[in-house]
Amino acid sequence: MSWKFFSEALFQKAPHALLVHLLIVFVTVSLAIVISVPLGVLLTRRNYQRFGIVALNILNILQAVPGMAVLALALPLFGLGLKPAIIALLVQSLLPIVRNTIAGLLGVNNDVKEAASGMGMSARQILLEVELPLAMPIIISGIKTTTVYVVSVGTLASLIGAGGLGYLIMGGLALFRFEYLIVGAGLGALLSIFFDWALSYLEARITPPGIQVE
Amino acid sequence: MIELKGVTKLYQGQAVPAVQNLSLSINRGEICVFVGPSGCGKSTTLRMINRMIEPSSGTIEIDGKNIMSSDPDSLRMGIGYVIQQIGLLPHRTIAENIAIVPRLYKWPKEKIKSRVNELLEMMGLDPAETRNKYPSQLSGGQMQRVGVARAMAVDPSIMLMDEPFGAVDPVARNRLQDEFLRLQKEINKTIVFVTHDINEAIKMGDKIAILNQGQLIQFGTPEEILTDPANDFVENFIGYDRIVKKLNLYTVAEAMKTSFGLVDEAEFSGINAKIPNAEVIFVRDQGEQLVGYLTAEDLSAQGAQRLTQVARQKRLSFVKLNTPLPDALSLMLENDADYVAVLDGDRLCGAI
Ligand SMILES: Nc1ncnc2c1ncn2[C@@H]1O[C@H](COP(=O)(O)OP(=O)(O)OP(=O)(O)O)[C@@H](O)[C@H]1O
Ligand SMILES: [Mg+2]
Image (cartoon, rainbow over all chains, first blue to last red; front, side):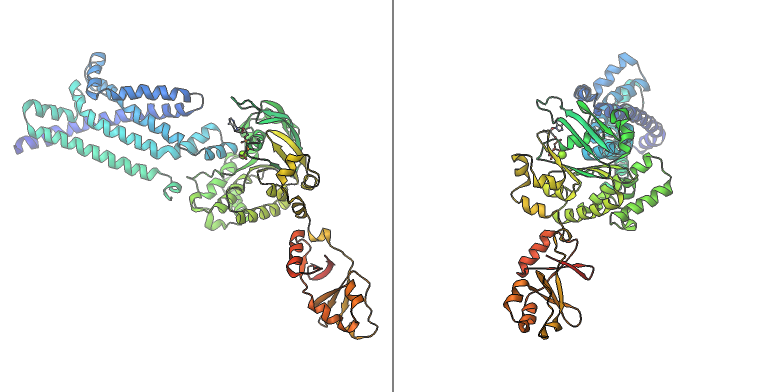
């Protein structure tokens, strides 16, 4: 254990690696939200409901493939770098959000929807003002699952040259520099914990007060 | 006016229609109650009126206009809708819940605010205390009131109410019914009211439509239905106490005798007491307080001197003009009385 390597890892390599890692997480999760929430909404609309099972099964299968394998597959298809890594991670980020969006929307009390539509609210108004706000805590919880997943599997992204905290870990392994390993893995763990905490806080904040009361 | 013409609804995958060739018309300002056993098609019929369900055949007109020619959302905005489960939005305050339809109509904020307060007051809720609460903080009865207030927000001329008081205990239900009837006298809306409780139907309805297995069995005023049930089904549905239920339709005012005698106690002491010739004679003391009554038999059986005692021995009870007849009758049984006095304010106006 050498302080020199430790501080080198922490102060010279880690900031950049962390930044890249955060970039991977933010871009992947944002894209996952933008794709998954509308997909979940669509799959709960009456005309598309019947595709729900099929879509969830496909996503389930994608999810079941080991993260390492997906990244490895992305290599011949998209080459090296950040972009293929993000694409590969994205594929596995969709399921939790889609699943929770569907569960959240289906969980909205039918009587509430019936009353809203009986008062003349349009389907769009019901979605935006009733269904999504009521489903939001569950959707956020899906986003949390995805985020934590991307933080951890994101460390593998350095395998295809995307950088990030994985770069420190791999480097540590290759050079037998235990210090690099510790810094990389430790920061990864801290990042996971941070996102978990931040999103739990958001989840609690966003839960409508009328529901928290219970 | 709401007019249903040969309306049929066959749900997908159903062998028998939920509603079958139903025709009836509901006049302006009237409460029409759909009543019948569970699954007879009451809710289906109601929900066809605001196009929550589309009929398989037949037409529905509101004020002569086929509802299929209106946009469903704007049709519903113009019709008050109350359901048993109420369906208040749990993430919105009471004020926001009531403001939903006014907001759809894009009313200005100030107007919405004062209307919400007005409605809460009308429904017997304290605006300051209730406005900012969430539905989960209210009792069942309070939620029902908010549900009704919400449906009346933009003062629609038609209200559809599907078991609106179904989710509260009988005492609260009775209160809500009474209050709603009183309110209806002022607001005079055309109301379609669904219940499976015949007593509620008799109490609330100007007209009652009895449904069974999707068919209209009888349509008429409560009195017509109680007097002349169309068939065995209706008779059974009303129950064995048809006569008692019918009594409920009447108040003391409609059944009392307006010819009665009234004498001062002091008169009895005179030998030639001027005793009026009436079936019942009320007796009052010097202070003009009623103290008892006499019947025609008492007069022939007793000497004039003892009449005072006889009159005072009988327990005299009083009812008001608008007391339901059965209440007056049970009072008579309770007091073992032949007659009760009917008061209009504090003036004696009749006897039962
Ligand atoms: N969406 C639907 N799809 C298929 N069948 C339905 C649907 N809604 C109601 N039904 C059927 O139609 C019939 C009438 O239902 P409806 O809800 O109108 O009855 P109801 O008189 O309101 O009964 P309740 O007193 O139980 O509310 C029932 O047999 C019911 O099972
Ligand atoms: Mg019903």
